[in-house]
Image 1: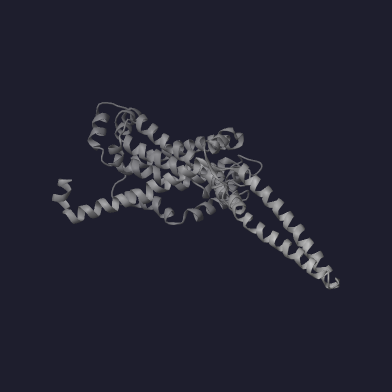
Image 2: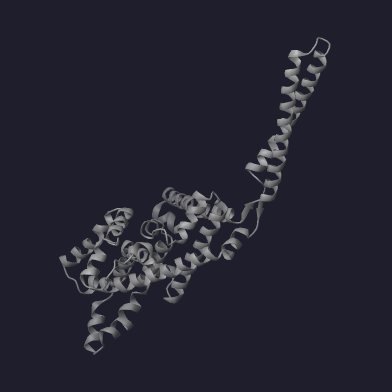
Length: 357
């Protein structure tokens, strides 16, 4: 702390620590803790059902009382003078009885609107026992891994070329060529691929022209269209971390290996790829996390015959109105992402400091 005081002064150090703490609390911890809390409780539907049944019984009694009051009032108009006090007394008794029942609805209405909370693993058990949702969860994970692998296979050569082959203005042109399409909104880029992958789109026209297919390929009603769209939309999350790491690699090491007779495969296997491990780890982590958590791409390109796990989460929140179940599904996805991050750090033998650099 004294080092920060000496470098920035007390006022600036206090400001930095305050804003950082507020950011961590408000943007990181509180939303996640609230989601975790929601995921572990559910409403007691038994109490809610009993309250609804009791409310229906009281409503029926009130209807009977109202009907009796209506009958009594109809008799009051034609009753003789001596009978009127008796009927009026009866009507007053019925109205008093109805008035006494009104307060009974308040706790019942509260129990119906906000039934008691029960904490447990019901929401997670539902995910584990629902065969369809469980299979979609696994499918989302596997296809996100596929997107990550293909993105790495495509981006590593590009990153190496940019960092050690391209010279001068050529590097700037290629980087601009990579970045300019990403100045367009993700949804608009996805709609562009919707037209490219349609039955009469550019992709099917090329396949037909080359004689590879007799009938148009239905990309938009399968997971293939989603995978293609994701690779295009998230490829920059892979290429730039690898490029930033390889750019610091001393090119003399590569030249020395070539002078010693090492093949290009051996150079990449023993020099370039080991050196680029932090960048590869960051690229894989970022690409996997945006792929597994995306909603727009599978919604637009997936059609009606394929589902992504994020679409189920969206459905729980906005269609089903069950925020607790949606929170459990979202937290399960978060645990998957954190597990993947830890696995990648262990697999590439990098630390958080290496990734940060």
